[in-house]
Image (tube, rainbow, N blue to C red; front, side, top):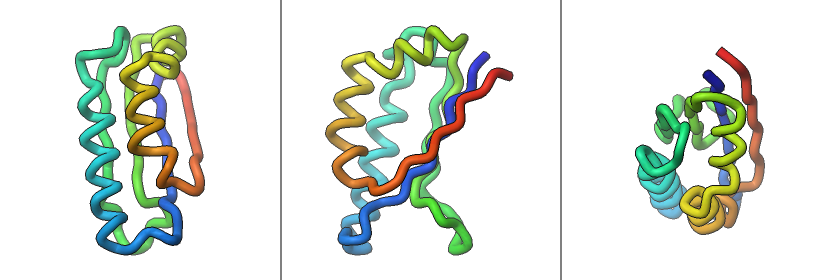
Length: 100
């Protein structure tokens, strides 16, 4: 099994209200991919970090193997969410992929 974990920071110019809407959209969009992408076992998005956090959104996902993760990266449903709900609103992205 492969884990795929991402932390994003949202753009500074977003208002507090916009950040709430963006985070909700990211969560709904990414979690909505469950059952649609071959090899995607689990996908969860955390948007309610504590004040001590320095990231706004966390993606925690699991795949059958590295090939499934590679397929996810280019799957049209994932690309649509990434291009429409994530990339336009984020300023930083940190990723860790690892085998379990």
